Length: 177
Image 1 (tube, one colour):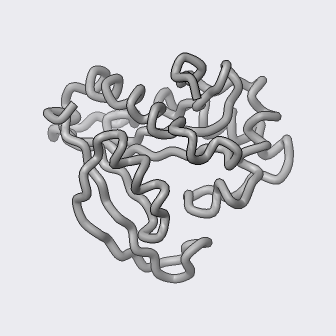
Image 2: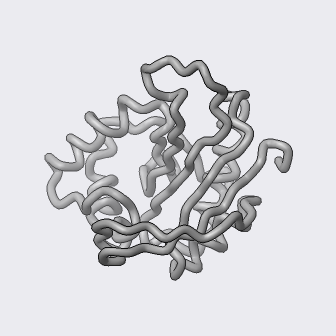
Image 3: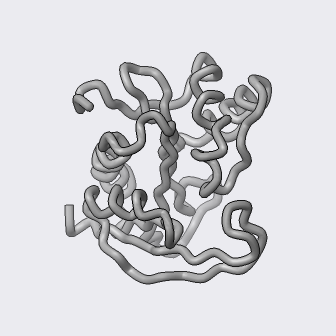
């Protein structure tokens, strides 16, 4: 995929049909926290209530059409004030199945990383999580410069994994970009 066709931008209400294509696919949503969207109304609500209010919930686009989602979360993005130094942010992504294996998720991460460190100088580390068996996501993170940190076992209700999930934790330090 030609890199110049890939972009990150805020979500728009006009993305509703594109979002429903990828966020309505169980293969895309099976390893992320939110449920598969099944109607245009759910997709529109997702854009309005989840994506638009968060400046770092970005649409991964090809030729300005939404084909995925990249999010960055850290406490400094909330409305509350923190006295402590905030050193880490979490990053994640989801991309339409038809674009898997084309380097688009890697390119989107590489585009986002310098912006995160620039916009939030207090961040010294970006953390990403991938399911133990999601080898494709491991490769995406490694190609984007992330390093293996550790494995983590969580207990709860995980739609893809049942009552227990093993995650592989990756990180990228600001000094490594």
